[in-house]
Image (tube, rainbow, N blue to C red):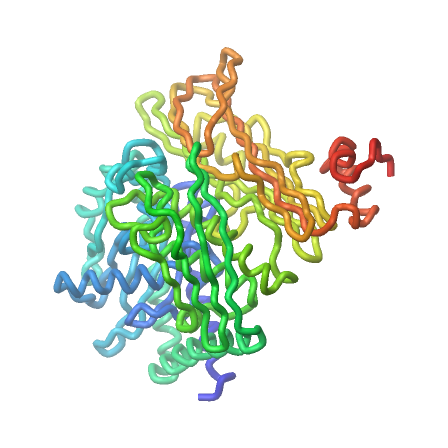
Length: 552
């Protein structure tokens, strides 16, 4: 089969994953999946090798192949076979590859009694039990974080196992969200199966499978061709995760050769007794995302990419912990720092392709409580400033790197929860100065209207600023606090869990992005535009440009 002829089938398969995502998002119950689109869908070969994926969440998609292969190995070890009409559910991070909130569903597509491919999706459920609402906090063990589900059939030969679903749902705080979102995932899987069968019917089994395999080979060749234009070199980087009063290093050595890439995390901090550990699937996802973003963002992504990539992540470190180490925040925060470390290392090799540090966090907010006998749980991530690029400013108030979600609309929050949003704005002067400035961070202010609640925040860059590059200045650090109804201000750590009373206010200030290049070389018209739009002040100009007052 010629290289060009596989593309119609390949791109049709990609759109199957896209339509799966549309069905999942449109039928989900929770705002986190329905409005924020915290979900991902993919198609794989029977052995778990990724064929095609939708443009969803990088930390989900990059770990998908790991999760699929681990699930297949588990089923084989238990003597369980995948039959037509089966759907398997799993959330154990050491199998599925991310954290407990992310529930992975897998189903086979059969043709004439043979498995042709696997259909998979993953979605972040707002609560899966555990000690605190939202199931994400500084736990000491995986089993504190929520219900751990090893691979289990929730649909067997087309029959939904409602009893199994009910038994798991009752262990969460919001069973109606759990069940509603899970049934949306099932609907998405069924849509994927239906549309893959349409492709098989139209193109034929042999032609379709040959096209899928050629697509994987093409991605492998694509990356190898890129590497041939880069000198063989080894480069290193290091950055840190904030464990409140302690900094945990992530160290990387990247060896680029014409026949492959080796990314070595030896020297990284040992695993810790809290949730900042990132399972191996997360490390693979963050590494592959960062390299693809730098080498060629338009590169087709499937298992062909991973055939060129070798990742060394020593067991017992925060980038490959040993079960039952807790991992809920590793998926969210450590994944972001892995990207930063690889960006920093690759700047030594390809400086014209690497941006300054972005806000470097998913800026997670979990709030949950009970009012009038009804429990509620809210979860969202918040954007911040993107790092300035070598030829362009960073983007203001945006999710970056390992997350690709939307914000939660204020109208949805205030309709679904006893929360009032007092402010949602960009933070003036939070951008790192440079020839190109970083993006602005976000201020998000919540007021609890009724009852009591528990809030957990999980963020980064409270102690360490998002770094600039090539003479650019650092972005403004994060700053989070509670204002009690009495007026008392309570400063929060980067990872914290506190109780809220009715009338209390939570203030989240996310970091800005780092700047790129010498600030003194910035175009005067860009400065005037930022000043007139209120993005920067005269104080900012005075501080960064050695000017007492700037009037344009």
